[in-house]
Image (tube, rainbow, N blue to C red; front, side, top):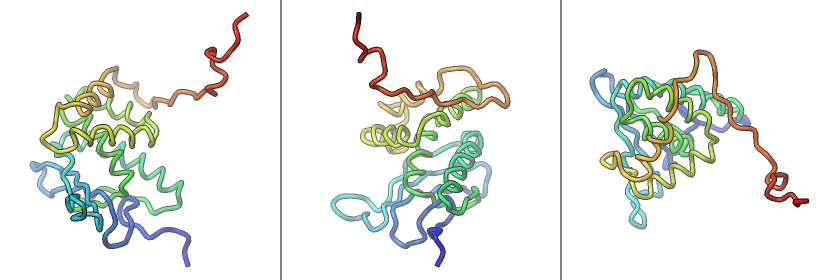
Length: 191
């Protein structure tokens, strides 16, 4: 028996009824990409819908963010000893936590100009997965549907991640070095 979990595309469980995200990429280059949250067996219970569209992206926006998301997700899937994925025409299934992270990137990028997209991708890549999950939770609570563009946390994601300069070619933004909270000056005794 293999120690690798059975998955499809980007870490989505190979089980019917699993909570996951679906990225629908049409064959036509003129059609939009749709990111859908599929609740699986949880759907249709206690007022939860079967699935919800989270964001609809223009093709040029998807083209600008797809590669950074693929690389980030595949690096983490490799580290977890899970098969990696690639984007393809049709339905792409993605693990629910990775789907939340992709929504954060997509929401920040959905109204961006072509000049802002590399900045958004760079700043998103610098966030930790837990930070992306928290941002998803905050955003989806009030503005998680396609028609909620420019509202609340969704607008805040765009403003926070698009503010800055385009990263230099070949230069990856690094996460800040963490400090032990108990060694910060706040906890030192003054003389």
